[in-house]
Image (cartoon, rainbow, N blue to C red; front, side, top):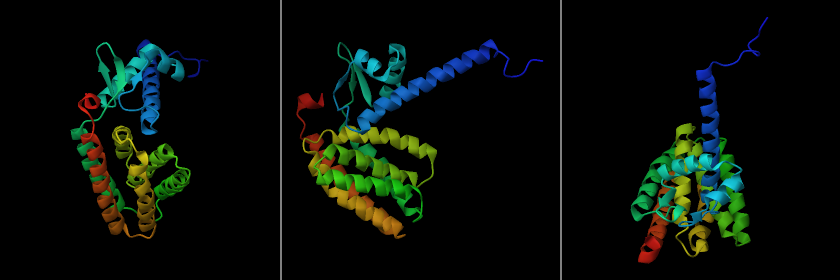
Length: 237
């Protein structure tokens, strides 16, 4: 007697499964490139060689092109005539918008946070990593730890939708950070401030943590916007 294990899927079902697998591969490929941006491995304005990236990620060029399309839609990549695909350089408008969204998402997450929420472990580990990186003057790692700290804040909301949204925002934010010639100037003050926000959250003082974050984001926004304004017309092109 035949069993379900022996059955062949209907052609339309098989096609759907094939498309689903292809879609998963495209998303994994896009996630890998997105992580390069979040960690500062890929810098604003950097050209991404289709051949090199496809070989590095061990995917076909067709899969990579689909991933490029996904990331272009997320404003993380741009395709330029005769130049190929490049990592996007954020505009001033996009920088201001990112910070507006961050204030709404992260501020509410802290105001509603419970002291024992598991996401505080993400925040704690990020603070510890950033402190070690600061002592070693490893500002790229400090920047990545900062991204992770804020991912932890968003995770306090227990929302998969917000988690996915913040993954894209984090990548755009790292591109904005890439505009600063001196990363220590940006990241050093916030190692201490992240630790302070964590301490307030663990103590159950959610209102104070949210207020600290709001002031923090205002200062960070001004720093990044000022760095953008100092760019030359050629750099902004």
